[in-house]
Amino acid sequence: MDRKKALWLGVAGFAAIGAGAYAFGGGEPDEKRKPAAMARPASAVAEGAKIVPQPAAMTAAGLDASRPTDCLIEPSAVVRVNSGVEGVVQAVFVDRGDTVTRGQVVAQLRADVDRAGAAAAQARAGNVFAERAAASRAAYLDSVRKRSEQIAQFLARDAVEEAQANARAAGEERRAAAQNQRVAALEYAQSQRVLAEKTVRSPVSGIVTERVMSAGEYRGPDATHIVTVAQVDPLHVEVFAPIAQLDAIKLGDTVTIIPEDPVGGEYNAVVKVVDRVFDAASGTFGMRLELPNPGNALPAGLRCTIRIGGALPLPRPSRPPVRRPSTAS
Image 1 (cartoon, helix red, strand yellow):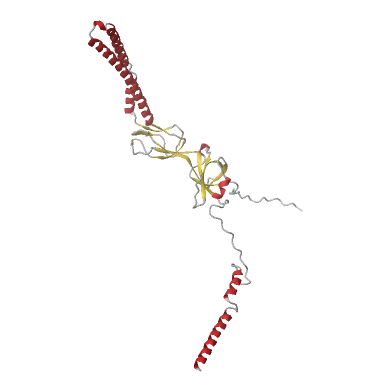
Image 2 (cartoon, rainbow, N blue to C red; image 1 turned 135 degrees about the vertical axis):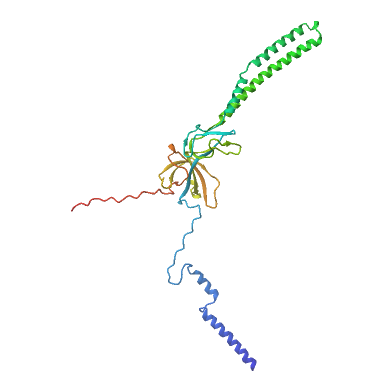
């Protein structure tokens, strides 16, 4: 009898637990409730609430063609002007901020010793007497050789051979004298080039941005340069454009450059280089533009933006509204 009571009590307990779970779950098993829950909109907070539309997929970096295209205006060349020879700087004729032209003398090294060496080489190169003397001796000994050979039957063999050897030696001396004169001419040309290197000229037209050495300093093997000249006509514009603009630009195209304030304005530049290796991190590619700058009107080192195919609208200045006079009724 006790076993039967225990069995009935256990069955009743399990039934009570199942009824409680059914009531708590809304009267439906989990398998039937899952599809209904998934069918509801994910953005809905509760039943009857306003459903917020999902935002559109964001454009990856570098693929937005309407994004501003940054650029940087730089000198087309920055030249560290130096001399090809060593020496003491005698004078520097330019300073920072000066405008120079191509071929203008910017510095001079001391060249007194080199001028003296050049004069000595010039004198040796112009000395024709040694070559003339050697030629006369060679001609005389050659005539002796010929007479000796003509009367060889009346002379000892040693005398004929001596005359022939003297003639050959005189010919070699003549050629050596002529060669020495040519070497002296080459030494004079070398000394002239050394003198030319002592005069330092600017290879480009531009603006002096740095003066490193002054008069009295020694320009040795460790000296990198004397002055630095930046060529600013034309200017180079380095552009970092979104990849989406790659098909909108090609070599030879003309684009509009808009320098940053306070310079501002609009300038036309021509595309000279389009990089074929992109920057995956920023989603951009590089370009180089050539911007004419007559009179060095634009400074270098400015940030700017460009307009490619209307992707970057130009800012329009705001105009005050026009007031029209009212007509009397």
